Amino acid sequence: MKKLTLFLAAIILFMLPLHSLADDKKEENAKKIPDYVMNISKENTYPNPTQDLPQLQPSELAQELLNSADVKIENPELIRMLNETTINGSKLALLFNASIYLGQWPLAYESAETNVNWEFKKINTNYVDNRGGKAAQRMQYAQEQQKNVTGGLTAKIPNSEEVKKMMMIKATENTGLPLAFETIIGQGTKKGGGHYYNIAPKNVGYLYAFVPAANEKGKVTYGEVYLKLKGGKKSLEVKNVTQQGIGAWIPVQDHLALKFNTSNHPY
Image (cartoon, rainbow, N blue to C red; front, top):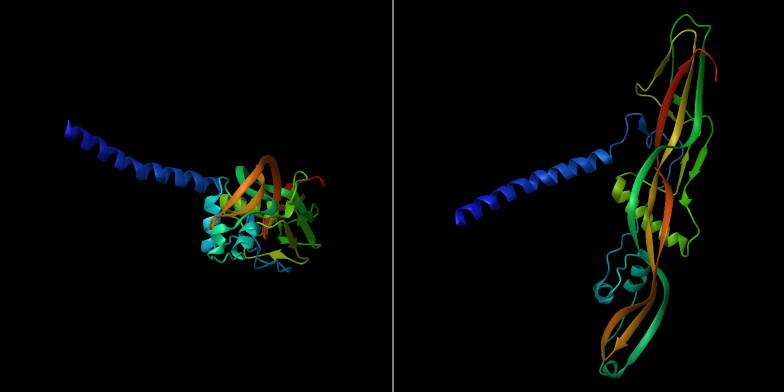
């Protein structure tokens, strides 16, 4: 019986890494960028600023307070405020009781679904007419006008800017893509390096450029936060907790989806 138990345990341990590798492969495939999507961070004539995700490390006091709350708290702005909080202990503090209202906050965002629309916003069309030609012509992507693509929340929600930051953090983790609620494609941006498209004689060629965007969906938790001091102990208390569903479109920065079509009739 003991040998059978050890044998079964060995089989389970052997299978665990395989299961993990399968899950990793599935996750990798879900995040795979299509072949027609190009990174133009080096070619973009407009230098988009890098988005620094506000993932703050809590101080020792802030972590103690976060652990004391019975509701998950991930809001970077609230953590920043707690990091700047100082509570000095004294003998008088043992006799001091207080409940300090810190305000109503979006406490955390829970992601339910993240998808990428690779053709979120069309921002350019290149056109070559070779209907009168006798040899093939080739074309490449060239941005004709500067384009500004913005995302946003799908509904009005309290403390929207803080919610957007938390949603962008989750969407970036889920997609592995550089996301920003605003991205600009500069005029004159080109993608060479062999990225050419051939137009046969008697045909017209169209090259469409799209800015992709992540569609993030989930729910945000709100609550009224109080700092409680009692008998020398400090803690956070969260009251009137509510949840609200929310979605957002978040453009992918410095990436373009290029779709090429030919026809013997102009569109």
